[in-house]
Amino acid sequence: MGIQAKSGISVVIAEKSPLLQASLIGLFAGDDRFARIRMTADGLDFVEAVAEENFDVGVIGWEMPNLDGRGVLQSLRGRLGAPRIVVYTGSANADLPRQSMALGAAAFCSKSEQPEQLLDIIVAVSGGRMAFPFIDVSGLAKDPLTDLTSRERDMLATLTVGYTNQQIASQLDISLNTVKFHLKNLYDKLGVVSRAQAVAFYLTECHPR
Image 1 (tube, one colour):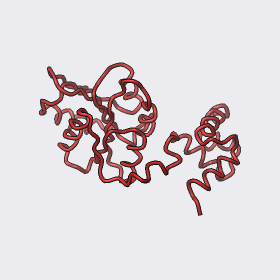
Image 2 (cartoon, one colour):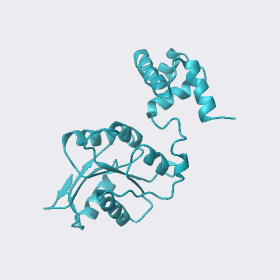
Image 3 (spheres, rainbow, N blue to C red):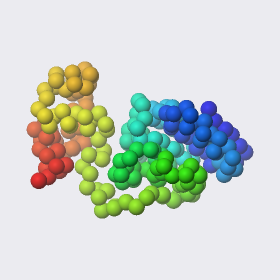
């Protein structure tokens, strides 16, 4: 689903709600600053759209099926020619603007704002600007888990309660080989070589006394 015009900003949006998709299409249709609008249903479809075509700005949710906002931002980090990303979400998590910025997003907009604000933010981002609510940037480098995927965070949580690989596989409904794969990636990102070191890292860096 999408709209096209002769010139302007090209945008691809990841939005899981068909009702909101239709509302956004109508909103963009009345603004001649935008040339092409394409809708995708989830984060995975959005990443595929990035691989298939060039566009100026991407708008993604945070809580999406198949691949969430964190996963999308992580998959685009360092990708040559990747679009600038606006995180557009109704989540009440007050830390999401900071997390989004740390993961490379260009802007953050809450769905509680007037819809027209999203359009203005997209225009600003297409011009090379960033747009975020107030963020204490001193904390951007303090989250040691920023680079972990949702699955890796789940994996770390199971380690802290002493689960074996078999118990992790059962708890997360994945195979033993998949457990080993995620553990290797987790250890690499944390800079450790064992589950004991991973747990120690979590306890000292994420929950210091």
